[in-house]
Amino acid sequence: MANEAAASETFAQNATAQESTAPAHGSVLTDLFDLDLGVDAQVLGATPEYTIDDVAQRAGVSRETVEKILLWFGQPSRNAAAKLYTQADVDAVGNVTWLTEALHLTEKEISSVVIATGYASETYSRYLIERLVHQLMTSRNIGDTEARFEALRIAPKQTAKIIDLVTYGFRRAFATTTHQLTTDCIARRGVGSEDQDAPFICAIGVCTIDEFSDRVASMGTWNYANQLRDFRSTAWNIINTHGGHLLRYNPDNLLYVSATTELGARTALELCQAGVSSPTGPVRVGLTWGYCTLMFADALGTDVTIAERLADAAAPSEALISPMAGRMLFKSPDFRLSPQQQRAVEGFDTLVPQHLAYA
Image (cartoon, rainbow, N blue to C red; front, side):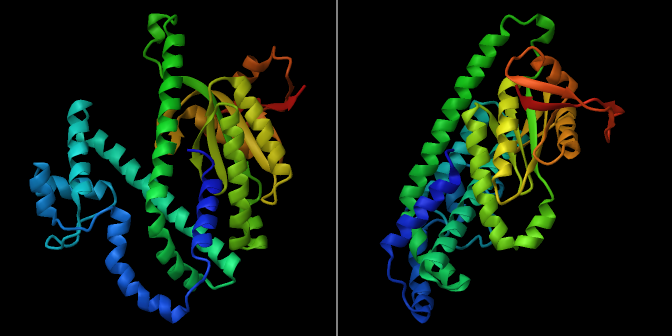
């Protein structure tokens, strides 16, 4: 997805422009009763008219299956007799069962995919609302509670545009992913048969904000969160500009992968440079070349741990790379490598990192 912070900021500005006159607080409270009656129709695209048993019957599955799928989406059933569902819920249940059969997935596999969908959707929804609340507070000089009431009035009216934005982001990301995987598979055709089943190898980078907790305490959570949003947007742009993929997006650190060590190195150095001018403070980056097992919004593996340990060992605004990554960059005229002292690394015996810089 493109720069999510910029997209949601644009949404917030457009939404507040359409609702330029804020009603009195009492009026908002009164209108919430009418809002509650109509918000489902606006957001869901139809008035809920099905119970969970109706969904099961129309989807041709058991009630237990519907409850399980809804729970994976993060929507547990709490009232079996209530009419909370629409034809879209029927279609979603049908799509999950169809994909399970068409892709020959086990229940564990399809559940992880649906849970990832629910997690991503909920995270994005909450973030979008928070950006709108912030925009309302700053543009209208109102308090948090009043801004949240007003957001409840504004946001549902933008549902169609938000859905278009999310759909576009997924389609473009999915197209990019399939293209890159195709390129990787073609490149591997010449590899010996003994390596054909090995996972894809890549450059793995970890970027950590220096003295994160101290900076949050000194700046205050609200102020630091706004500065952090800007830095994360910058980091997202840097990683994507160099063809990488952002996998972990924690407040104090991020993890990315790149197709080559050169691209990973350029990303590492630009992240360090971005940290120098960011109010969030300098960053420390660790980079290695190796294998990892991809998870939703994260990755695991020995080489991931090495990148994390290198980031921990780096000085502020410094990028350290592993011996393996150093060997791959050794002949590159674009980089200068400076061997460091041998270090004891938690979980490993010793490691001889190299300082990374442009030539």
